[in-house]
Length: 168
Image (cartoon, rainbow, N blue to C red; front, side, top):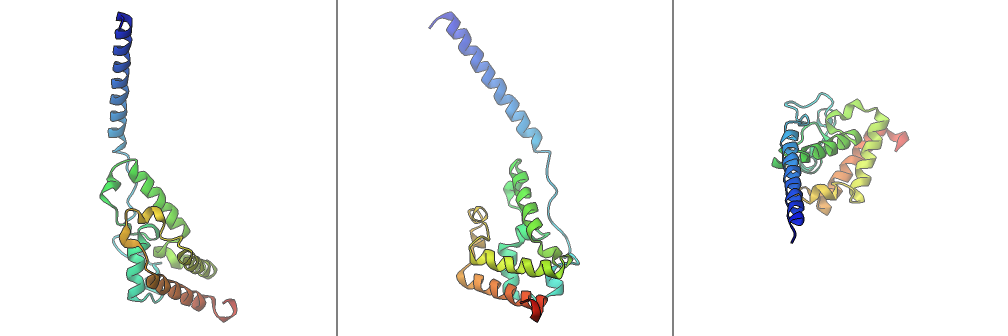
């Protein structure tokens, strides 16, 4: 190996070290940029359970399998504190709440409520919810066939009640 090759190799190693140091500094700095937590100390006035009957059995399923992304009360895992993972999780929570937020359910018009309840049934029947990516880590959120039937029956029943006899 020539002297020029040795010098070039040392320069490459030095560049790699600098790059790794810069990446480490950036990683440390982004830890201070945290999204706001999606947690509420009290139920929202528009919470579905405050205005409609949600049986305890259904409520437990919704809390276990749906509320992290579809309410104002996310239970965050420990790794939420590591950025950019926390940003990614918050994006999913915001996206989920945009589609359906049980904590703000009564802020929807009756037509929107009916549509969202119909979508609940469709998503569960088609195994669209909970998301597979959520279930990879949250195995406890998997719905059994009985739990799916229970939630779908509740959503369908409430949908018919809200829609009235003419819009079933």
